[in-house]
Image 1: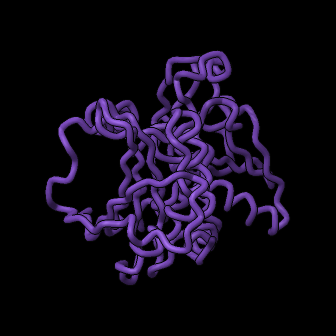
Image 2: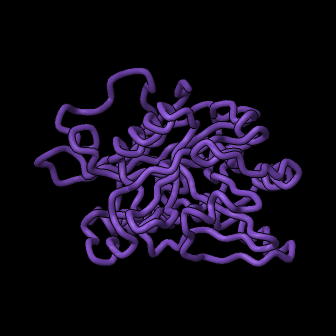
Length: 294
């Protein structure tokens, strides 16, 4: 994936309601050095981000992604982002997108160490080819996240449920899953419940009922999962947030990893044991997720 466009944002107060924020945007060379040495996003991963899918120049789920950016900012004690400013910046960036699928990343950092201002920028890049994952599915390995289901409520300083830049553990989990012969990982709690994948939500079909782990378990509330549940409910299916035992994952009628760029990737095996792939439903879900959505 090679960045094609990048835009620096000078953050303004969340209550700034000017008609245009164009003077707060600066295009930057996506291939040139852009961060000062003291930037805390690079030094400590002290910041947050969002990734938006872009289909034929249309950014998907802008509203939900900006709501989650604001939620993560609150959890991390970052200044509240100015939502109209970010929305205008996204609109400017996606003008550079061509046909097909792209990805826009929003990055919001605490700034330079010792400084008094946050830093922010947006990048646009070609999306990877996810056709195979969407059709053939992905094999997953379950990995213990190392805490029980009640830890998020007892230890809010762990920032569980915030989309932070501190993704080293997530990337290490994917590498470990691949060492085990899988394509991706699914985190489980130490007391035996399904949580989330390192970069995706988990959804199971149990008969005509679709379930996903409750966000109260300290997982990131997926924007794609929210949109998909709304679609499934319109189709007459029951949806629910629930505690999902690890044994339910292997015994599901079908299961998917959901994310903004990969979309709906059916799970084809859990810890080496195959599970059914509903190809027709997966195709339907991905067709819906590729339609323009606000």
